[in-house]
Length: 232
Image 1 (cartoon, helix red, strand yellow):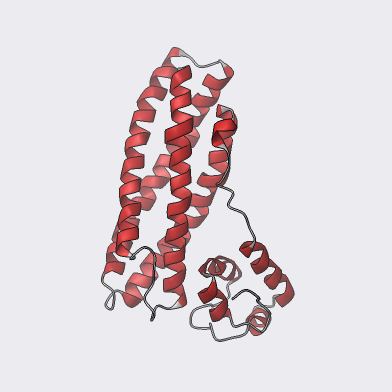
Image 2: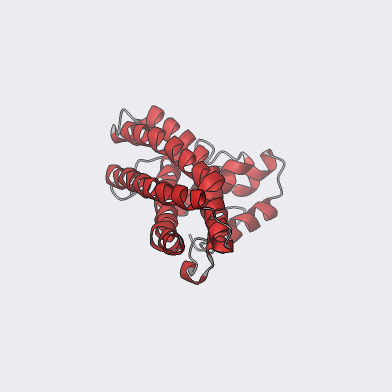
C-alpha cells in the first residue's frame, strides 16, 4: 500500500506495514479486532484528528533508521551517548511492547502454532537479561569509558573496565543466540497467511529488534570496546 488515506482501514494499514501498529498501540486504536474500520472512523471513536494520525503514519513510514551511523568516526564519549540514545532508549520502549505481544499471541494462537509458546519463553528470559545488561553499561561501563576518554580514569577504573567488557561480550553472545532462535522459530519473521494483525506486528517487531540489536552489538564489540581497551 503506497498511498494511505483516512478511508484506508486500520487493518489494511497494519497489514501493509506492521510497524504502523506502534502508532495505533500508542493511541489506543484497535488494529486487530477493530481492523475493518476506516482510519477516520477509528480516530473519531478515540477523539483523535484523522489528519494528524495520518501525518504520524506517513512520518513513521519515512523515518530513517537512527541506528545507521558512522560509529568509527565518533569519539568514545559521543559513541556512548549515541548507543544510549539510539539503542538503549529504543529497547526500554520496545521490550515491554514485545513482552505484551509475545504473551498475547502465544495465549491466543499457541494451540495453532506451538512455536509461539517457545518464542514467549525465550523472550521472557531474553528481555530481563538485556535490561540488566543495559543498566550495567549505563551505570558503570559507559561512565568509566567516558572517564578514560577524558584522561581521568583511575587504575581501579581501568581494571574494572577490562573485566566488564569481557562479561558484556559474553552477554552479547547470549543475546545473539536468543535472536537466532527468534529468527528460526518465526521462519525468518514470515507470518502464516492466517495470522492476525497482532501476530504480524509481533513478527515485525522481532525483526526490527534483531536489526537494531545487530547494529547495537556491532558498535560495542567492534568499535567501542576495542578502542576503549586500546586506551586502557
